[in-house]
Amino acid sequence: MTPRELAALLTGLPADQVADSAIAALTDQFFEAMAAARAADSLRNYRPDWTTSIAGQTVGLDERWIHLGPIKLPSMLLALLPINVMPNPTEAALARRRSMMREDILTAGARSANLAEFSRAVKALRAQREADREFERNRRTPPDDTEQEE
Image (cartoon, rainbow, N blue to C red; front, side):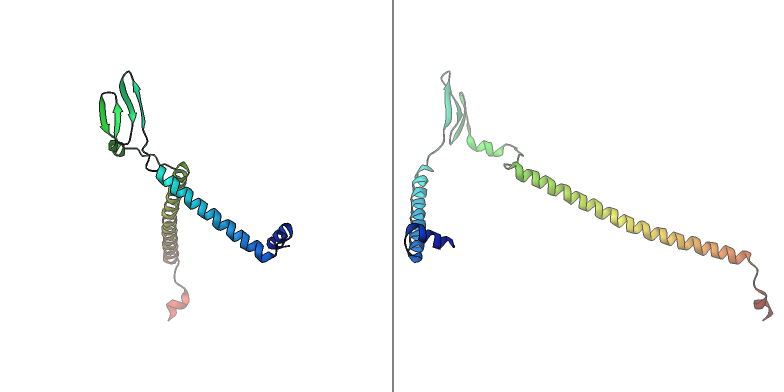
């Protein structure tokens, strides 16, 4: 049975009416969520105040000031602090992993280039040594008699 047929069997309504009632329920939930969002919007204008009074002096942080007893500093100074911590530790770990992978790829690429260059140099050196050996062999060997008779 499909979910629509099962719902029709349980409610005793035809399948079309069940679909219509489901759409109506979803629409009602949407409108309720919109009303809740509007209500929460009015709460967003609330400004936090994390201050307290210690020995008659205000200490803490509010929307405009950092209170340190008799000293008041603008809270915008918090933006100037050199805090190098990423807000999401999972993203920081992923960034670190990506950086390590990049470094591994660059190192492997450099090794590959060096290995290819090394292989070419070894082949050239072997060819040169073989040519030198062939030259020495030919130099020590007297020419054939057939070549001299001509």
